[in-house]
Image (cartoon, rainbow, N blue to C red; front, top):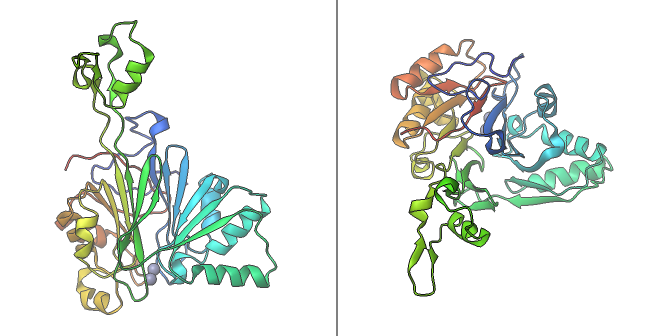
Length: 332
Ligand SMILES: [Zn+2]
Ligand SMILES: [Zn+2]
């Protein structure tokens, strides 16, 4: 299946056809599974893979996720961070098999796992009774489902939790790039400028002589780096306006849309959202683009989800398996 097959999009750039940045600055999302709890042929449960430069981040790991990774030719050995939203099976039943397979493959590198309390206990029990001894360090980071928390402060990304309103403890995840360093305008600088000056200019510091005079000003010899990009994953949740501030101006928002608006009461009762509600969050948060998914298996057609959401937020796409999106700094 082609990476861009089945794409239903409203002005969303696709990495295969539009690549405005060097590949070393990749920031892409691949949808590995977009279904909901009831098994449905051809619709696998939730799993998203975020690629930032050379790093992979797996978000949720529904049943069969390791096969979806194989299909997409993604080597799981490159994963160092896995995020699980909550302990309903359609979001993590693929995790123990994936962790076991990494072990079989001889992994020795550290792996960081973020998720609700209890996930560590479940895995420990599975591994105890299957006599599985992981040959690599697995670091479990319990996620507070109530208070937004910075979970990982990496050199290029900050990853935070986004508390959601679901029947059990549930968190979304927000990935924000750090500000990039300014770019040097080498042509404007004399050839004999000391390397140390170049470094300081790139760090955003003016070059000042012994008398306190500015020799080279940052604003004259650099251009600002590209704006930081961001992705927010909002897993199973009721409509919650508490999300809005946390995901404000995110470049790409994934928000579940299990039901259509005519089932809004049902959505409320079972702690899920409608397509219209997902679009309302995107609109109020001034998101760049919205992807909706996790449609209830009662629906056979998805176009009504798209129509309903686009009435509120035109830049909406459906989370179809294999969808591959480049996250960029959209104009708000
Ligand atoms: Zn679910
Ligand atoms: Zn759930």
